[in-house]
Length: 137
Image (cartoon, rainbow, N blue to C red; front, side, top):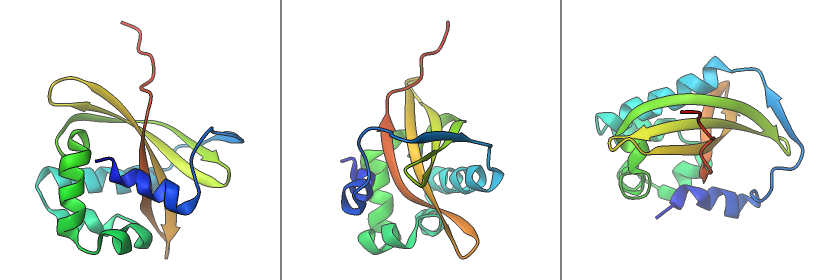
């Protein structure tokens, strides 16, 4: 179940990246994503849920529902072996942080995290799988 993509559909976002503009790295955005992944790694779903936007929190209702969705739909984020940050881009007015995740089996995944600022803090408003970048061997 790739339920975090729900936000893209519900919010009318998605499709081709038109008007893409690469941004300077944002430590606050990266920290939010890192903190959520660290919370997942110790099964602290209540803490991980705090890093989700109010829209996501409203859709899942509880941290338990949210945690179950991540465990089942995004196991590479729940138990990553390695996490690296790619480009931060502005696409049609939204900030998207690319995150490269290597799972426990060594498979590489690329995800785009849509970030929103809520009362001065960065929150995750959507996550979608994207094709992983080509890596020279």
